[in-house]
Image 1: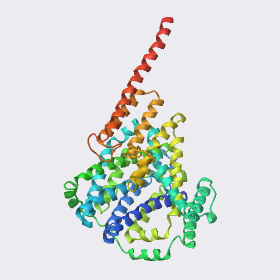
Image 2: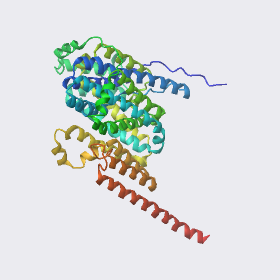
Image 3: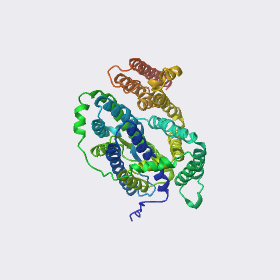
Length: 504
């Protein structure tokens, strides 16, 4: 007799909290894109008429596909507790595209529309790179230690998610501390909010009321935002063809930024999928990398500029008990927001301090998962893999404004932060191999570190030959050291075995 088939719900109450967490994550990125591009002089016709709708198409397509894969996994494993992967624009990659691709394109051409076309071409190439990387995704996942992958991810969670959002929380304490307390009480403490309002929604409502009551939010800013309301349809474009002429011509140097950041995005997807595997939902990393790449490509065909990825927030959604409904609802809401230009109004209405605590919870959940899903003996590897992101955070936040201050703290901060994802995985993997006494594997990972340093994917500002020679030599030396340890250990085992043989 066959097992009874489960009914995987389209939506359940737990999806509401996860929806608001995912919504504000994506919304914050969309708002940052709009504010930054308007500040760079891009007209509203490009920002709200092309870039935002194009990015929304990518987000919509990815969210709906991941809702489908969640349903497929639920049916395959005959269970209802499957959580769809969270999906959206990659925040670190977004900043690189804004200031490392779009900025130079605008500086060279002096033409906002042409700079946008160059950005679209770069996004399309980035998506195709991730699709190509997807063919090796499962192999990489199987051969990289989980402690290294999750440790690298925990470094992002601690610095750019929980840490950064905690700063926003305490920047406006009247709003932020109250919202944080609500999140901790409702989600961690499992206390039901008044009138059974979902915890995240309750925190946003109370935080917004406090912000206006104490004058942190202005009604004038809110009303002024309505000037951007209109109808911005999703229109396909082939503008990237014109952008390619510059990308493969005068701006060919941008590939030194484009290639490593695209590889980073593929690794980010792999890490986040692996984190969900640790939580019990095992998705195919190759499929996810291909979906993320194709989402970026689809967005570029509609004018979007920014690569997409599976979010670190998925683990938080899993802990909230979400299914697939939050992903479907996120797609629907972003369709409305992009079509109407309402993103500007929402960003003026909801204070960052009210929504930041939700991501603080997501960040600390990821750090906790990175440790709990590994054996205790691998904790040092997880912790060590987190550290490069401290350097990356200081480098990205302070080095441009005050490089002498950062260098004054330590000259190692910037090279540690450059290519932090690769550095974190390499040193984490080496540590795991040392713990397991597998010195040959440790030597191999050291050689990979030397190679990545040589071409500039680690410890260097850009791709070039012999980019970080000192680091390359360092990795080569420890590779030789690990080979020596392997043969020394083997020789020691032989000496122990020989007396036993003679005694027999």
